[in-house]
Length: 285
Image 1 (tube, rainbow, N blue to C red):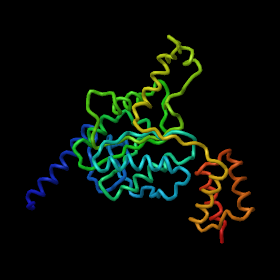
Image 2 (tube, rainbow, N blue to C red; image 1 turned 120 degrees about the vertical axis):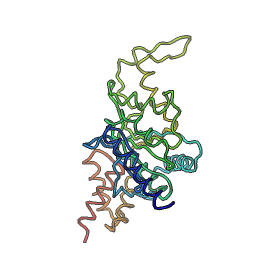
Image 3 (cartoon, rainbow, N blue to C red; image 1 turned 180 degrees about the vertical axis):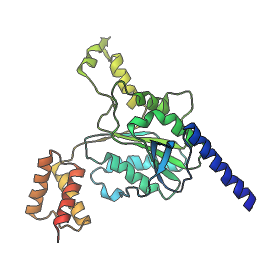
Image 4 (tube, rainbow, N blue to C red; image 1 turned 45 degrees about the vertical axis):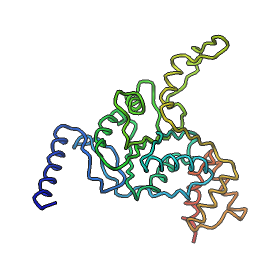
């Protein structure tokens, strides 16, 4: 490319960004970074680069081997241009759902894969986000953490349409990975079950249940996460103590301290195990 051609190319990019700014719509950034957040600010709706993303390793996630294998396989298919499913990771808090998404992204980040974090209140912008990525050669994971909706949330229908409910074909270069404590993403009330009917011996859910199930069913890959056993919890504590050079869980005193730490928090989760190890590392000489 000649210097003149390069000048006009850069000028056109600047004009496109300026037009997008004036109209308050999204403009695709130069993909120098590999992680971005979708933001609303004085410059309009835009993708903001994350200069220091959380570089978590798959090796730091223990006791969820089945979930790791499934999401790695799905993401590898996507990165290599083969068909892949949007994924919903749901289950108990602190069991590694969102951390697994970040670890999988880091595993493939040296290629064309980019991560875009979208907060729940900005899901109404999904159409604009998808449009901004439409002509890009990179491949994108759109990441929604701790996803759940109330019945009147506007982002609910936007997500439903982008997943599989619009007249527009799904984007080939975009997958949605979401984590949630709820399997069906919407609150489930006792009253919903009162509409269930039995017809010819078969159970037919009411409209309220069908509506709530319809969103999560649009995710092709479901991965469930369950609370850890005491044995698993101590195994994770041991891993982090060694990783942080903070001793070992081999002695009974440290083991009892780790269990007491979990009991005080009412959870034997991977997050609690990591927090205990950090506390020990801070006290370690």
